[in-house]
Each structure stands twice: as C-alpha cells, then as structure tokens.
Length: 466
Image (tube, rainbow, N blue to C red; front, side, top):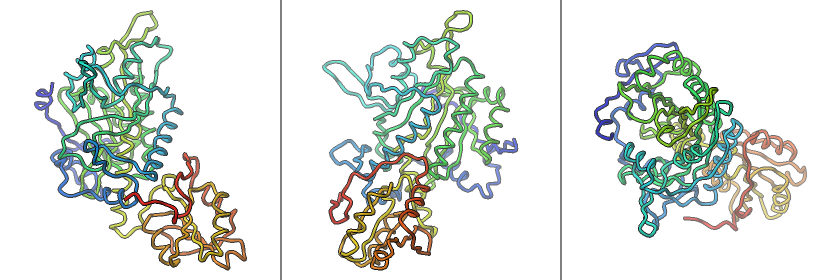
C-alpha cells in the first residue's frame, strides 16, 4: 500500500464559499495569505526546520515545557505552569465531547504486534511505531486510540436504534517515532496527548450528519482558543462527485476559501477528511482539529450492528479529534502570539489558559498583608510579587510574562480599600474596589475550566526550573 500511495497524485484546488472551485495555482490569493502559505507547504514544503521555531524559546522562557535529555527525543517534560495549561485544555476538550454524547473510556497503550486485525492494519498503513518486547512477545506502542476503541466496539451489542454510538478517550500517551530531522519542539513530537473519538454510523446519511456536527465542535474549540487557522478538506474524487452539495455546505458555513485535495483513488482508510491547520512564523503548517469518514476499519475489526431486519451490518466509522494533539495546541498558541509580538501587538494567552491571571504588587512591606488578604478572595490564579524590586521593574517583568492583569497596592489603595489595576494591552490604569475586580476576572473566566495554582503564592518562594 505504501508504494500505491506514492503513485496516486494529489490534485489541489481552492473551494470558495460561493461554490466556485479553482485550481490552486490559478487562484488569486489576495487577503488569503495564510491559505497560500499553507498550500505551498502542503504541496511542496519541507517538514525539516532550518532554524528553531519561536515557540521553543517561549516555552522555556516561561517555564512551561522543556526537553528531557534522559528520554528519546520528541518526549518532553511538562513543568507546573505548562502542565496546568495542558490539563485545562484536556478538561475542556473532554467537556465538549461529553456534551456531544461521547462515552469516555480508557484503553491500553501497547498492543500485540501479531494480533490478526492489528497486524493487518499495520501492514496496510505502515506507521512509525515504537516496538518493545515482553519476554519473547512483541508489542507496539499505540500511535492513536483507534485500536483500543475498535476492540471495544467489536465486543459491543449495537442495533440501528443505538446509532450513532460515540466512544471517546483522552489518549495519554500516543507514540509516533517521527524522523529525527522532522522533530520540531511541540509541533511534531514522538510522545503526545490527543483526544480521540470514534463514532459508529449506520449509513452515509448518518455519517454526513455526524461529520457536520463534529465539524462545528471543532470550530468551537478553535474559537475558544482564539486561534487563527485555515481549513483543508481532502477526499476521493468519487465522493466529491456524489456529495458536492454536502461539501459545499460545510465550506459555506466556514465562510472562507478552503484548500481542497482530491485523489482519483482512495489512498487511506477514509474517503473524506477535514482539518483545521495553523501556520507559524516560518510559514510551516500543523493540523489540529480533524474529522474523517472511515470506510475500511469496521469490517477489518469485526464491528457490526443489527439492522431493522435483524441482520448484521458493517457500519461506517468517524474518526474525530476536536483539538488534535493537546501539545500541538500550545505550540500554536505560542507561535501565533510570537507573530503578534513581531507586529508590535501585546502577546497573550487566552485568559482561562494563562498560568497566572493576576499578579499583585505591594508597593512596600506595609502593603504585603493586604495582598495576602485579597488573593484567596478572588477566583483567579494569583501571584504576589513580594521581591525587593521597584514597582517599575515588577511591572516590566509581569508584562514580559504576558500576565493579563496587574494589581498595585500602595498607601492610597490601603486607605481606600481599592486596587489600582492595569490590563495587558491597555494604556490606562484604573482604581476600583475588590468586588468590581472580582467581577472583571469572573467575566474573563466565563464558563471555561478553572484550576488554582499549585505553586507558591509569593514570587520570592518560587523555585526556578531553568
């Protein structure tokens, strides 16, 4: 199959919301510069970085993630503030899927290399697995949660009345032994975390309906992370000819031109796939959210449902990852904010993902007790900069750390009971009571997942991780 894939060439088009389809090389890009960069990368770009991407310096500078010299390359150590961001993204992705009806499971991380169905799958679609021995038995580490969920679905009793059935796992961890020259910080790793959902559908009509619903789940994710992204949709020509209206409807909903890749023959297990991709400062792209219609693996793994006549039927499967790799989402956030900073803007993470949401600054030692009194009254991740530095130095440090809010407490604030507040990216400073500050912070948090800090409140007590 690997040789066959090399023989099937991609055709590249731009599909616009008005229904027009133009060969990519003939498209007038205009304001669609990111889409053009994405097309150039997809059609001919190298996956090897000539220089370190911007996010690597940022993830180390902010003490979020770092390399682990004792592990295989592409496997990282997550430090307290980075791990908090990762947990929050995992929680939110899980909330989105559970609201949709995904039943959460957990499956093994290693599988028998000689298992009949798994062996067939790996021969059909060779991937870069990690192999290991247990005694004289050969295993491989999973590169997705597909296998475990297939095996669960194979053993389930399903009728047409149950469908669609959705099985979901937050995959800790998946492993892909990517080529060393393609490893690139958090963009391309060998060990990663990814939410993985599979949906059993009775027929193509139901598969299209669920595909459309999952497309909108993915849009919700990208919007709530405030990410800029471009869309690719990939399919077999036969599916395109039979479902042009369906595809056109999705692109109309998306509202912008989309990169369309078509094949004359089916190259993979899917006949339709979309992705949301981010483009970084090096004009390289990485896929995040994706949904696929799989026509091959249900019969391979013996997944059946019983139809209205009591007969066993092969279903269709949807593969969906609402976020894609959680690790790669942090890459996307940092890369895009590096671009913002280069353009002179105020770089920031989404408030609900900011490791520190408010830094309180006592002007002198007299103000420190008031900061300590205020901090636990706020539902926010608060730090207190109690270091013996000038206020100006403390403010500059907080700005370099992209902290959303700075609260200053001096003699005037002690007398009034108020707080002088600076918001990142805004020039004015305002003085307001504690209750109003709490309302502002609560409004910024909204309904997103929240966790308190698990490191010392006082900066003077915090260890350094680099």
